[in-house]
Structures are given as structure tokens and as C-alpha cells.
Image 1 (cartoon, rainbow, N blue to C red):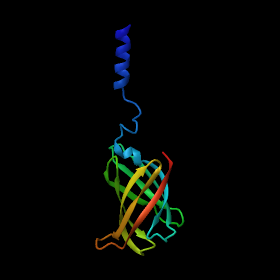
Image 2: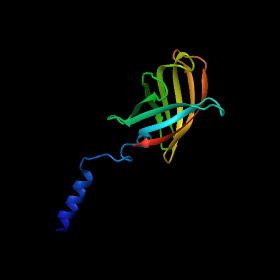
Image 3: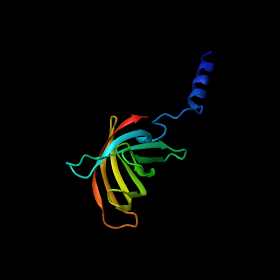
Image 4: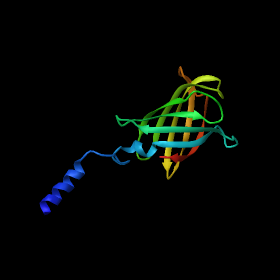
Length: 143
């Protein structure tokens, strides 16, 4: 009986099944739906947005950003680095209404509880000096 119980426990532990957040790697803690704002300065009221990200089958973190206050195409998000303490994303290329230019934005964010906060830097899509930089704050609204 003990042998059968041990065999069942071992088989259950090795069987494929739903991957937990830990099993999916550090990117899993950044997956979900986030709503937030980007700020160019402390006095800025911010640009509202929503990000939806997921861990793909190959283990990478991918998603899209949509602006919630204007009609614009979704912006693709590619994760460049991810760890237990930070995530570095590249957004775009996309047309920034504020900069009135085609841009790529790099963000560095950290999760603390249900908050994802960090900094961003926007550059021309073809390269060059930053057009703007600032901070962002967001809350997870769905896992």
C-alpha cells in the first residue's frame, strides 16, 4: 500500500499540468492587465493607458499597450530583460501623438504588490537622442 501511495505521489508530481507562476519563470509576475498613467513631470496629470501581457509558449513575456483616452492602434510590447526585481520593455515602433513622431519607448519597471511603477524614455524610431522621458505608475486589474 505504501509503495502504491508513493508511486501515485511521484507520478502526480511529474505529470504535466497547469504551470504555476513560479514554474513559468520570473516573467509570470509581470503578466496580466495593468492600468496606469505616464508622467513627463511631477505637475503632469499623466497619459492613461492599459497594458495586457502574457507569458508565451516559448517563455517570453509579450503584450500590447492601448491608450484609454484616445483612439489609436495597440502598441506592441517586447520584453528585453526580466528578473524577480525588474522588467525592461520596448514598446513600438508607434506614432506618439504627444511627440508627433514615430517612436520606440523603453521602460524599466518594478512590481511591488499589485503595483508596477518605473521610468520610460522615448526615442525616434530611427534612433537618436531622447524626445522625452518620465515615470509611470500602474495597478494590476487582472491576472
